[in-house]
Image (cartoon, rainbow, N blue to C red; front, side, top):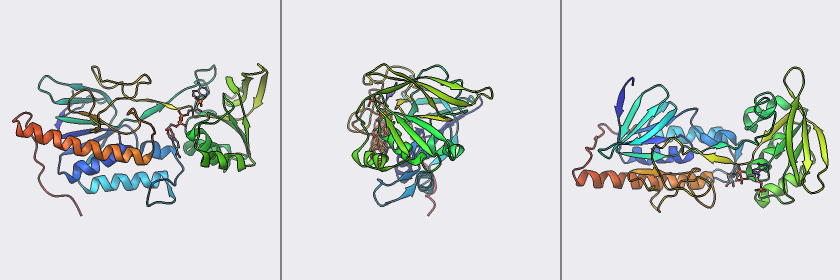
Length: 328
Ligand code: NAP
């Protein structure tokens, strides 16, 4: 291990939940570290425009991400770009987070806000053509498909919203959905159906991604699940939005979760492991929005503060008192 650093709260993941928790932990004058493997923003960076975050009728995803980050930093939260490989509870009740670089970070409380990873279709050609026409991020890759014909797979908010977004670049977008009804919200559906560049292929699944000699996507083998009719669909790109899996595998030991793997918490966002809190997209709940992530992060931070105070009062884990105020 290269070094060990001590904090009062470790926050794993810098999406809306993590950055909100960081802001509240900072305001509580707790020595707080946010560990994030990529850029701060989480799912905000996969969303072009946010128009359902109160106070912002229209704001770009990356722009809101930057505001969240600078707000958390203003109140003293530290950010480090590192991939956490393991979070483990030690015999003395504190937590240790180990990163890919071998650094160990320790704290008596951890807030897990690591979100999720896009679900793959699991079909031939999907991994082979990843980055060569197969994508899981419209905002990252959309501009590569100017004037082209592409496909989007899925029927949830992400697929419907991104299909609409991708028509800024693509000439034609097929939305391929395995059923005859979308689960996306009605307002997103309305936009989709009103967009003349989008054709919905109902009851259809993609069975294979095919490409040319240069290794670029050229064709999809699809099947109508009702008629069993097979079809070749000439496209140069396929964007897959069929949900994502919660990133909970880094926690060592058992933490209660639901059937889909989402972490179960109490109303204070505390998991079944004392001192480990969870907030945002990896938490079992009805919906996953920026607003709910921010709400979760708020509760988790305040609950973590109370947890730390109780520990201190009991003379348990020593508290690190932060010196100096926050920058204003
Ligand atoms: P989701 O709501 O779980 O939808 C996943 C979609 O993919 C469903 O339509 C599902 O079909 C389909 N699907 C799943 N597995 C498939 C497979 N193997 N092959 C083909 N299709 C498959 O996921 P999401 O759209 O990523 O959204 C996740 C959460 O983020 C949701 O709570 C959503 O509301 C939120 N979100 C909100 C916004 C927004 O409000 N602007 C934007 C993005 C995401 P079935 O319908 O048949 O199950």
